[in-house]
Length: 486
Image 1 (cartoon, rainbow, N blue to C red):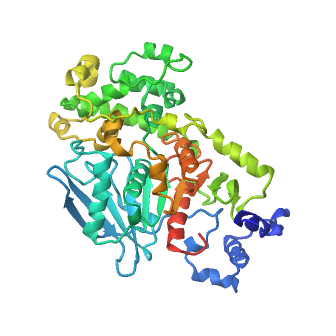
Image 2: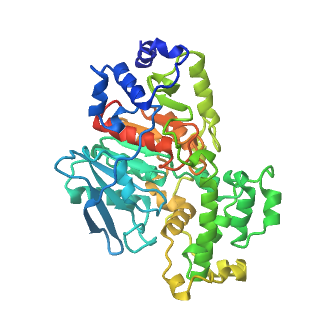
């Protein structure tokens, strides 16, 4: 028997019977403690609420706390990085690093709450141009390779032998994988959320005509293109069914608006860019917090021993037809790729670009409607001049110059790169309805690196604060710390 068969064999047979009327919460907790082998139902009171939860009872963030340390690192003549640390270094034996998304999103105190304060010393690092790092929104010397080196510089500065856990979300998963492939001996474990490999197909999905996401919100895409002077009628005739490949004209136009010298254009472009991203982010109707605190969607899990399976609070469900259905369900989640050719998503040639794309200020002014170049009534000229929308600017910069910024890390699924990850335990959490970073990349990751445990709450989207995503992340960091029954 393999481990999955053993788990199924040990499943309580009583669960197959018709369930009795729901008991009060305290009784339900006590019954779970008895199933898990506690000597007395009263032992539940000695556990934290988080440790007592099952897979069906969703975990929540640890309590908020204040930073216990912060500092800056001057990493070159341009960039100075800001970092914060949380929890008592004496009582918290494990070192964790949170890697934010974007690029450009920056870190926030809530990011430390995915880790047990009794077990982890948590570091939050604002990447180049992000958060409180300076200069804000700066693109000079800002590539994936430099961000990787910044993590290593921080580790050395803090005096750590290694990171016990890297937790990266969205773009942060790209950075976590690139760092681990460069310094595998410095990473003990990884937790990834909303897997992003920053491939051409992933950029096209969100920011190109005929990329995929444009069809999910056609009216929103029309507004997105119109805001930078692209004709909506022309777009309507070309989107979907036209046989044409992805068109990045809008992305290139936003590049000129967001990174050019015209501050009024930057303000208006930021508004339309953010509106488009949020419209796709919000497509999943279940993104709102689950008020009951219980899981309300199936959990699809990949691990190397069991393959694909649906899971509940006891582990994998019964074998046989269910496993076949789980496998089919996993592949049905793909939006822009096939399961037999993940390399097609990269779209790179043999060489990467040695320089970023040139900003064309006149191109932006020429095409954008004059009305859109006027500042909103509540924004002054001086405010516009100092307005630096770091996330929009850096996301656009990285997306437009993907070959340049990815450099040597442009294929994170390469055999050589994956081989360097083999001995690093990794748990990935992916929303089944994530429309920002669709499940394709997570599925391709486990296809290339089958040692990863991939957990997919099928009704969840992109947000790390979605109840089921949050629960899985907290369980994952607890598992690396050896806490409770996570």
